[in-house]
Length: 395
Image (cartoon, rainbow, N blue to C red; front, side, top):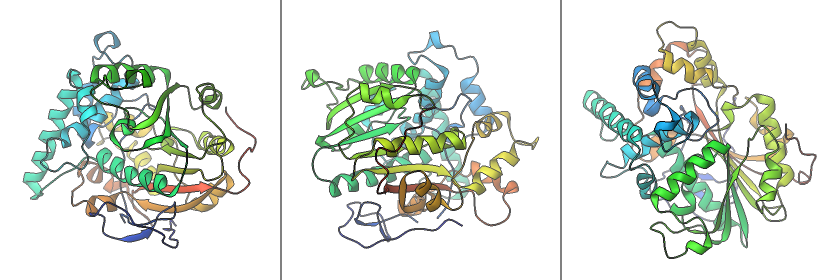
């Protein structure tokens, strides 16, 4: 069984909408969301079509079929799917009170016709659900997940003095380096597949984002951190060497972020990735990651055998390869980390006063049985004492 871990309080969280007091992984009391949900990939470790906005499989198929790299500024199908998923957050930006404001993302995808078409599809689906169910605000999963992660990031920065690093694995179209007030003492590294990294570079240039110190004062979206570095590397290969070559300092505390990534990797690859992060982590380092619960993974795999589930959804489910073990604290200890907290993202929807899209719940309900619910797990962990410098596994 999954268990929420709580520890003593030393501070307070800034988001006044969060309603329940719980101990954060980094030593600060905060009003933390509370149990249960599903996922959408925002970065690039999937090569199958995604279900954008939890839309019907036919909508996903319509947006992905016929796409050719030469026709798009985004240079690969993988990058294309990342763009389509990011459209969820662009759709929510049209609400009078969006879950998350991201003007850079809007500018980055302003001229991507497929993204704009996906935005319209999301808006129409949510409006229909609002009308049918009498809801005020149907919000995107990716926006809620990102906002939850933002809170964890800012708490870590508050609790950790001095210069530090933030490494985002499978970063996709993440914009935290421009969106959050990270301060000059933070160096941000984004690790992703070479094609995704190239595609993001194109989007950043198109959006007018600063990426180097030399551009200071000349860009519409300045960096809000000390530096930003893109690292093109395959996380199933020797990504650690690529990170080191780009200036990563093993002696500095590091916040590792892996959102919407692990379930696209095999279980043994996930373990090696955790071990690799621990081997590179200095004392004071921490981890924020998300994963599928076993119940969610199991339901998705059973759905693959059902003729009533659409092909688009099946391709998405088939790309999932792992889940969070049901004794997560043991799992993290085995791989160099000490789990501090585990939350379910569905609680954040209630906390933020918004509703989930019902498509995924309806799709998986026939396959949900036994203990547990199809939940999406958010984990925070700190470096386990003695883990630094452990043998590194990279392949």
